[in-house]
Length: 318
Image 1 (tube, one colour):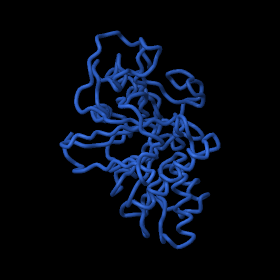
Image 2: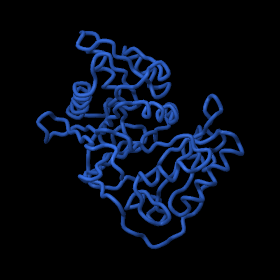
Image 3: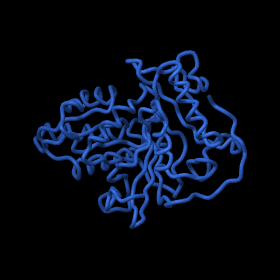
Image 4: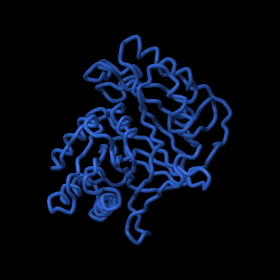
């Protein structure tokens, strides 16, 4: 499926300029700090403070909370458990976005329910692999990528999308905000899993993004080959597989394009990429999130120790 990029003149990014971008590792953990043992005490404290602030600001008794994957969300689960245990919160249930998050919620001692059992999700919290904010007064917004992690289990992009669509509010957590780098890198896409069906869908994606991104199917072995190696990933029910759109520049040692996502040879916004991917028959879900209401991160310059960008006038055309 993957093809060699064809060199062509580069153009500058068009549309809104991103203000700041946050990145995490492929496994959903921060590049330089994680909530696990690799983080320093001060870094772990900062991440925990962000989790506490999320619960303070966005979780109330009786809420049904959509739960994504990642160390920062694990800290959120721990904080919800503590507040349920001492009665600061009551009747809060987690709505998982996959089997892994369901197990993490159960281990944390937070009651779990299913998406089908609730009329709506009050708030969904996701740890983004990468996120960027747009702060134009006329068209503010947040865009992010989730689902890049492949271990210990593949993400359930389809269920994640359903939870987001049923959520009253979506909040992203990121380990840090950095330089104004456009959103780019890889985008996971869940597509139909039948042998001929996935190939047709992947070929159509490849045709659209020819020269801009390669299409790689996920497999049991990471980086096996573009077709998923000897054991390509297929969901347990056989319905879908996952391919990654890798927006990498072959003239830059395979690194990401300097100006982020590309479409038809020019820099493109996450909104444009998402819209284009969704036109392809056989695409079931993808990892680009553009519906977030706010993004939170550890911020030593803020009096609370936590920064938060809230989208005002959400719903305006972009």
